[in-house]
Length: 184
Image 1: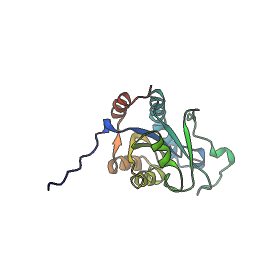
Image 2: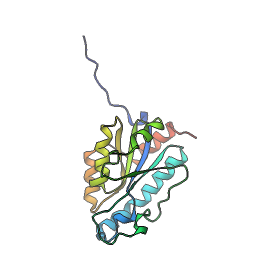
Image 3: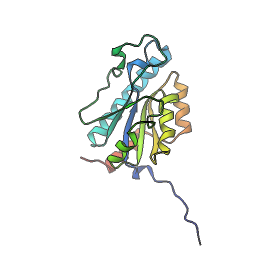
Image 4: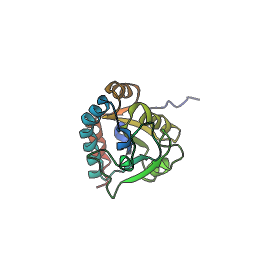
């Protein structure tokens, strides 16, 4: 009997949910200049990707960390999103308490409720919560991808390394996927 060979699913065949991890001011309070540079450099593409998902009628899911961070100077207004980011009425919010956004949350159920088999991850920090969420997706039967140019970190080298290590989408690949899987 011949064994069936597994073949990777092409990117255009994936039904993506956008998952935006921890773009909250609490994580840039007293941040290094390199972190603020990363926010400034990567925010425009992130906002463009969010807009493209909404225009295509695809799910936009915000992950918000509840709880204390390891940084001083955190106040109530530190929980708000970074400048320029807004949660729309059509978006979904999932609150988390750990680095991995799937751990002790309903994120997997939310993604699957939209008939999605993959999560496109953006957010901060690339080497911490985004990466933990990336690896955690596999345990949920969800194929994770990073958005190239959609990561924020304490240093740009961690964004670059994350994309080297993981599966990712470019803006061109994403646009192709969203044209195929538009819900509008």
